[in-house]
Structure formats: structure tokens, C-alpha cells
Image (cartoon, rainbow, N blue to C red):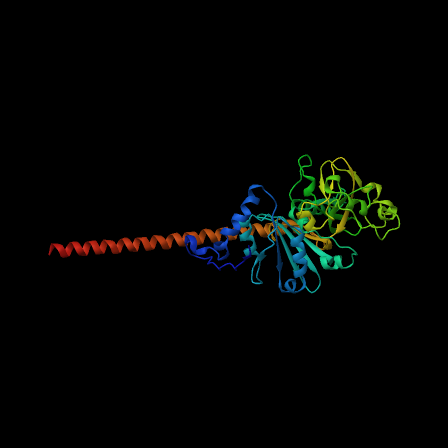
Amino acid sequence: FTFIMARTRRRKKRTHLSDGDGGRSTSSKNLSSTSASASSSRERKVPTSLVALRGPLAHSLLPELSEDLKKMLLPHTLSNLRTRRSNTLKDFVQVTGPLGVSHMVLLSATSAASYMRIVRTPHGPTVTFKIESYALTRDVVSVQRRPRAPSHAFTHPPLVVLHGFKTKPEDEDGEAVSLASVTLQNMFPAIDVRSARLHECRRVLCCSYDRETKRIQLRHYAITCKPVGASKAISNFLGKDAGGAGDGKLPDLSKYGDVSEAVAGVFGGYGSESEADEDARVILPQDYPDDATSSARRMAGKAGYNRRGEQSAVKVHELGPRLEMSIMKVEEGVCSGTVLFHQYISKTEEEAQELEERKMAASELKAQRKAEQEANVAAKQAARDAKKREKAARRSGGSGGGGGG
């Protein structure tokens, strides 16, 4: 289902009465079907993300990165949401509730750099990252000899691995780094190790923080698993009941002088010279499908399996995209509010106190004006009611006099 966001209708903010449905935005009227699809996610409290572009330069420079991020955040993301350039931040905030969105990923760009803001809805905080460099999925795949991107790997969310985010008390950006790590981790559903199903672990998202450069490296991988000790030829020869990837048919041995040539490790796979590293060998507690088999063989029921209790080799293959970014700013609200951290601007306690006093004065003035507007509305309504009563009294008096004559 594809949902196109509409621009919010401008609403008067001065002396007027709320007219029920008159102030509703056009976009909120067309959310019934999309809200139904997101209700199950809200009931399970699964984090759902929204990726959008902000600004004219972002629409021209970052559309492919936006699509790659949507695919990386699958399945709990609004991948079919189509936005318009005229959509404002208010439009996005208004649809987060009906669509069950917990995080917004907003991409923007200037002539100097590109930025990514992760917003926790509906009350914040907002973490702004400066994108130092990035590589698209097509760039990562183009340099791989055998790229692997199985479609069934995107039916479950990736595992999140955080490295290097533990800070020291003397670090100035310690709180910002901790908040960034929590934000990245909470964008994906939590995993219960005791009840997790191994076949759902198809991808991994690695986030690494370098304290020297103060940059975050983000990598996206697919997880593959194969039985250890058998070459590709033997694995293809074995049936799926024996843990292999083949259907049990005899292979063509006419081009080999000896059977040992066919079973040698010259066909690839994790056997003989191409055996996996010792660190990559694990004993699986559950059966795990072989991702290297084709979708046709998997649908035909001929996919290979890594058997429970047997030794298997685990490998990862990069899917993309790659991101290298630094924490630029942390705000308390939704793209607004108190600035908790800024990479380039620092304020003293006196300056921060003065800024806080200004904000409090502005909020008090806003509340005062709102109260005055409400009083004006009430006075106007009372005047209209009194006028109506006077008219009704004159009409009743005139009708009574005419009847007596």
C-alpha cells in the first residue's frame, strides 16, 4: 500500500473557535487503511521508523541513500510512504501517531555537508549527525566478487552490535555519545536471547565509535551459515536430510580422473584449503537454513540446513550502505528545545541561564496572549448571545402587542 502525504492545511491561530473537523489536515483524513496496517506494530510496541528528505538539496543529492536506509530498516519501516517537497516538519509529526512511528530519520543537505537527524517521537530527543562520508549499496556491491543479498533476509530486523560507545567521565561528549548509542539501539526491536529463533537472525548492523576521531562507523551485513568439513561437491551430493544442499542425485564425474578430484576443496565452500577460520566455527543450538541456496530450491523444499548440534561456519557479507558520521547536536525536543550538546558551540552557565530565562519569558508571553485571545473569544460569544436574546425579546414583545390590538 502506497500512501502519499498531503500538505497540512493552514489553520487560523488568532481569535477563532475550534470547529471540530474543520481544522483537520488533509493527510489525517486518508490514514485509515495505513493506520490499520500499523496497529499491529503499535500493539507489540515494535519500533517503527520513517525516512524522509528535507530541503531541496536533499531531494537532488540523497534520494538513493534514503532508499538504502529504508531497506536497511526493514521490515519495521514505512517503505511505501511517498512524501512531497512541500511537506513540512509539522506534517511528519502529525502522521507519526496514526502510523505508529517511533523514530523519524530526516536527511538534509547544504552546500557544505549532509546531515541525518534521528528524532524520537513524539517528544524527542533529536540527535543530529553530520555525514562525513557514505557509500551506497550499489557502490558496495560493485566491488564484491560474489555479492549476496537474499530477499528473505529482510523479512526480519537486523541484529544491532555496538562497539566503542563506552565513554569515560572526563569525556566532554560522553552524554551525547551514550544518547546516540541508545537512540541507534532503540530503533530496532529488542531481542530476548532465551526465546529468539535462530533462523530470524539474517542480518547484523554494526555501529562502531572511534574516540580519537569522534566518528561513528555504520556497516550492514548479511549472515550466512554452512556446515563445516564438507566441500561444495559433497554438500551438493548430499540430500537435505543429510544436511546438504543438493537433492541426492549423482553428480557428473566424467570430467575427473579420480573421485578425489571431485571431492577436493577446489569448488569453493568451507572445506579443505578454503576451510573457515576457527573463530567462525560454532555449534548451532537450532537448525539454520543455508542462505547460499537459490530461492527456487528453497521453495521446492530442497534447501540445505545446518543441523542442530553440528559444527557450522558463520560468515558475513556486506550489503551496504556504509556511513561515517559524527555527532553534531543533541536537542531535547523534536528538532527544537534545549540544546544538550553541540559540537562547535559551547555556552557558559551564565549564557545558558540567560537563554533559559528568555525561553521562559517567551513561553509566559505566549500563555498570556493565548489567555487574552480566549477571553476575547468568550467576550465576543457573550456579546453575540446577548444580541440574540435582545432580538428574541423584541420579537416576542412585538408579537404580543400586535395580538392585543
